Image 1 (spheres, rainbow, N blue to C red):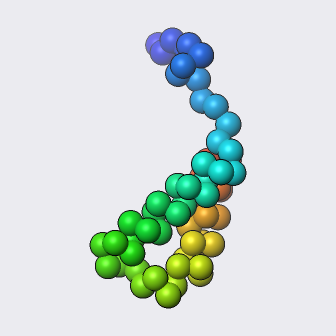
Image 2: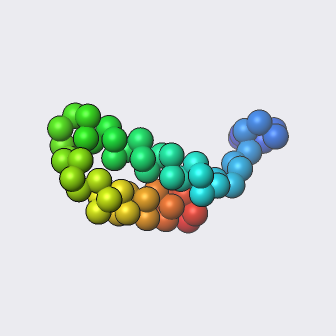
Length: 57
């Protein structure tokens, strides 16, 4: 049985945090050569939507 304290309870994730996570994911894919910087805008949109959907569900 888990004990919930204010430090362990889930808190809402803000839009700024979602943007940062999505950016970090896309940048990491660029760094490891799995994604071209030219596709940043297109892929960022998809990653952002996926992260937002995941944390808001």
